[in-house]
Image (cartoon, rainbow, N blue to C red; front, top):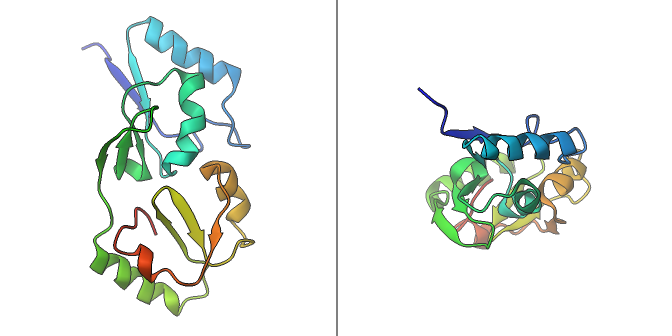
Length: 148
């Protein structure tokens, strides 16, 4: 049975430690296509963190952000979107409220964070290709959150 499609994760797989595509990776994807093998990506990243990878990899078909929660195309067309159920989002926030953790909510292709300088925000800035919106008022986002 011939391989018809290869689906790859992004962080720790497709990009280097600086979260960048290497020329060798771009070339490998081009060789897959030349061999008649389709290629796409799926990641926990938001759409904003995947968009910069699409042109260098020549991806025009469906790609998946938030581990498949949003399927979209390079032109920004959203093919499918599954948000967190609002009741589940509110439960998650109640559980996190008493814990010594930074809270992040992704909604409307924006990243909202309780601490803009938390221990992992530098890495997320690179992965999401955006700055967080600092807030402690997440309630209005929980009816349409993509990731918490």
